[in-house]
Image (tube, rainbow, N blue to C red; front, side, top):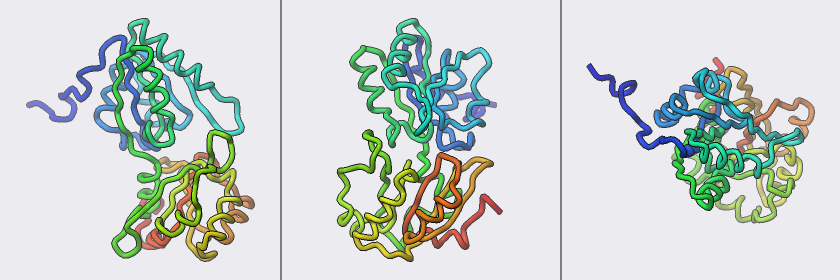
Length: 262
């Protein structure tokens, strides 16, 4: 009898000379999509990020070549131009190239930049979405992104622009008014400035804040704070990256909904 999961080809067009850009999710291998799992099985070469979880890496076949292309703030990192060059070079050599990125490749992941370069080079590609940490990380911490009782809007932001500074194109006053829940990626370096801007924009010092480190993995750690003291709390007891920062009333649900760390 045919198994609808294991006996189905979820990636029929992964041909030699093509690139699949796939999201690996935030760490738990169980959160991979079926298409991403299929790409892992069929790839000749996997070019992977620093944020791809160990459990996901263990699924890569032994006969597949692996190239690390990780980026971490404050550490030596692979240049984006070199990553693109490798994608094009190996695809032109006739390999099935899997570009494996943590989370979702189109959510603060420079996936669009890489796809544009592939398109300009005439390299066929396919995009496989992944579950972003801003959703799965909150869920594994027992926090809903939205709730009928608290918020009808949620905003996902990066705390670290291409310049290395806090993004300059954010209207903090408007943001504070329209988005009760804020989820920040890569924000801990500039946390004091971000918290101060939100406080000046009218957010309360008592507003709940949560830090989620290594979300969805066995190393996950969750620390709660408030907007008024979060910068001080994190400075006194920093968590290992990657760290997600969520602000807003939904953080309170953790008291009843925390399930992963029990």
